[in-house]
Image 1 (tube, rainbow, N blue to C red):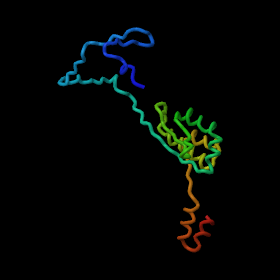
Image 2 (image 1 turned 180 degrees about the vertical axis):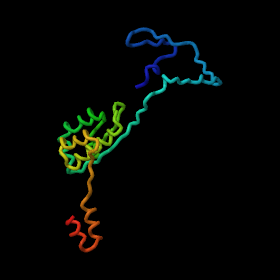
Image 3 (image 1 turned 120 degrees about the vertical axis):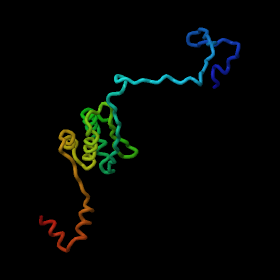
Image 4 (image 1 turned 60 degrees about the vertical axis):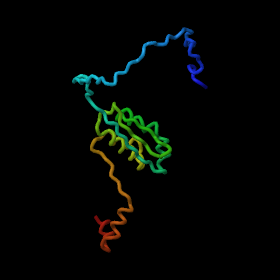
Length: 168
């Protein structure tokens, strides 16, 4: 569909179809001075931004066997992240991950890390109520290991290393 001005002849006046009035075209030419330098912009203390916000993002992959339980508990999961930590959170179903992002309302500098620990605890199999303790307490964190790492360290040791490890 051609533009309405393309269908207009040069001698016809332009009419506004909403109001039905004739639109006057400006007749004065726009003069552009290429040699003029722009006036310098002076920033005062009042005009400078006081607090800059750096938006950070974290993606937490969710294992396939934990995706359905997290999806079912989602109405209990996102309110602590959004209301308590002031984070933006979404579940990416395509990538099977939970994405966290800080916003301009996020006040705590460790909020993103706390949110990541909270979601990782859910991915490890914690209940929502138990994982909320990670958000409330500052000194609480999760440490995990894989059984394969323990087996590899035991295989290279002395013959009695396995027995000695269990005796401790």
